[in-house]
Image (cartoon, rainbow, N blue to C red):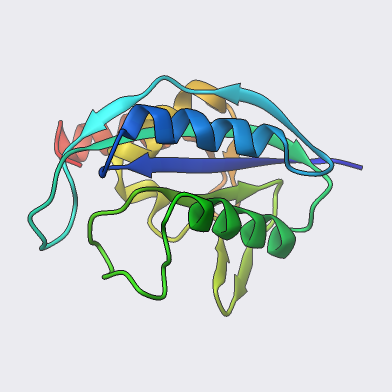
Amino acid sequence: MSFPACIALGANLGDRRATIDSAFEALATLPATTLVARSDLFETDPVGPIDQPKYLNAAALIHTMLTPRDLLESLLSIELSHARDRDKQQRWGARTLDLDLLLYADAVIDEPGLRVPHPRLCERLFVLEPLAQVAPDTIVPGLGRPVRELLYQLRQTKGANP
């Protein structure tokens, strides 16, 4: 049985568009996984205390038979193949590729190194805007509300700021 999962993609170093396209291709070739939808690309300002270039952000909806942990390991491997090593890079810093597991079916997971839904999912327009393109009616576990409503609420409270 396959499960729906949503992935956030971001890049702000190098050829951002080519990196995001390559990451989508890598997602589509994961074992027991189908890329169902990909969002448009959104150019956004970086978040955090470090001065850095703008990001390109996107989201993917996949169906997978991988477990959440195996999917996360696959995402980290894709990042490594694009010169991103989370252990060696500064948190909130610039990066060649960032892949975050946002949602996995209706799972709520809180384990070392794996939290689903992503803990800052509802705080960031750069995540919710592309996610709303690929999974607008998906109910976010633990909140009981669809992505499109969370996006609307965040736009009301934060306006255009990420």
